[in-house]
Length: 219
Image (cartoon, rainbow, N blue to C red; front, side, top):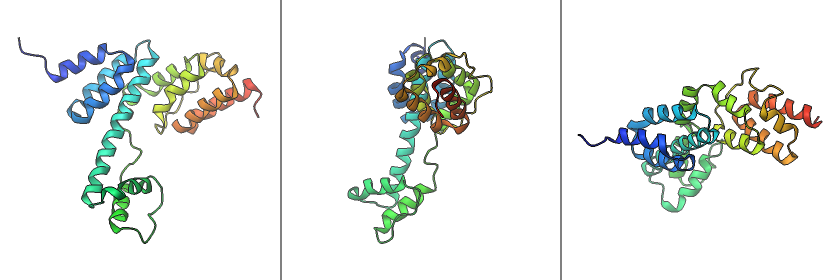
């Protein structure tokens, strides 16, 4: 009998690992094996359709971390291409996160590297977005609406930042567990959920703001 392939082992582990172990496993695996991208997304989507919201959170976190790791590697390649010295790499990366041209008068190598990084999709999360597409917005937002604790909702929303998910009008009903939870939430809990929702999309944040305002007397 032939030994199991890497794909076979990956498929088995993705079905068995507890949620808290998915993020380091997936991020480490995809750092060196991009040929497994499609398999990992498919298996995580299959498992995330179950009854464990923690699995969906862990899967989204894992793929977002994998995306970030790949982005970081591509930035290091840009720094190497422009011979940016180690002593100036941190300032180069900091300047790359600012949406304006680097200041004049600094090392030309830094300017060139920052300019090239600005041409890339700095906030792209293709693996995370592939999972969201495989599941569908309604599945993800249905899990969000089913959150009975504001903290659980905030944890789910955090790795979805920038995904621009748009809710179905019927997703967040007044009797949904999250709507009920927001009705009794503290100001701090409300702030955490609404802030995370705005990072996902304004279309998602608006109904949550309306629910929070109506149930908490907010203006």
